[in-house]
Amino acid sequence: HVQLVESGGGSVQAGGSLRLSCAASVGRYCSYDMSWYRQAPGKEREFVSSIRADGYTSYADSVRGRFTISQDNAKNTVYLQMNSLKPEDTAMYYCKTVRCGYWGQGTRVTVS
Image (tube, rainbow, N blue to C red; front, side, top):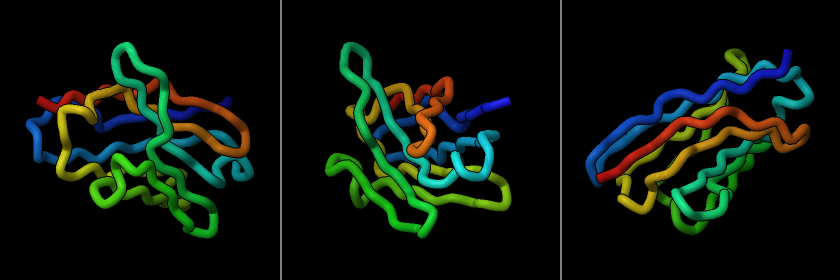
């Protein structure tokens, strides 16, 4: 059963931090190359960050230097550490498998 479950969202004041988690039950092949996307109210879903199996990471310009993606292969979990949060980071955050195109249900982040 394919499943991506995000957690860790919440409400935080500007300048604060949150760590999102995405627990993946998608099989080994699909769990390589994971990514995070977000969708703010009234806006299209946008790329946030990705991590490859070899550890290479990518970030959107808007979050580079503030967000850090990491992966614990033993736990089949990918994380998104978000620091120095801004109100414009408010969105639903989604985990996605790059290779297989599976999406999680999302976790809400609100920055005030």
